[in-house]
Length: 181
Image 1: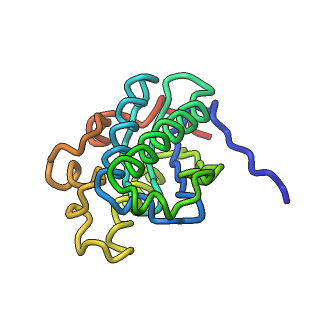
Image 2 (image 1 turned 135 degrees about the horizontal axis):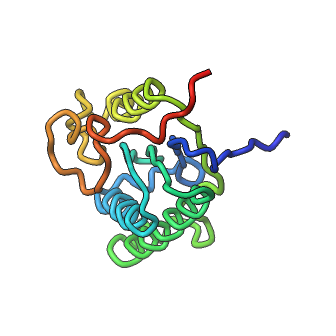
């Protein structure tokens, strides 16, 4: 099987997806979704990273981020997954031990890898942002994207706080403009 190359030094935004181990619904509990969002917010600040949108689903996560320096993507995702994994496991052990006992203690919270897609232009950025925001609707969790509280859709559609400091696409540019060919 050919290994997929992730390009993280091009100055583009990145659409990132990662899933719970074996697609288990480890994020069903609201507290777990808040943990993922809280760790995202702290990681954005720690690495001076721009976030353009996100959604936390019961078994996976999507976000769009841009890094001011090359080579930050893998560190960002690794730290986000590691920190949130620790906190989610701790939450289950402390507050839901009956559920925690059913899980194999050696199993991770997250799948080992993640998917990253370089976003080269604003049209692709808007397409991916719309995909992210419509994810809870397609999954049948809500009827309108702004009803899902674990997404940036509420900010874009209603101007409401979403728990993450992110860049409004209507105000900030995606990245430095690339020369036209």
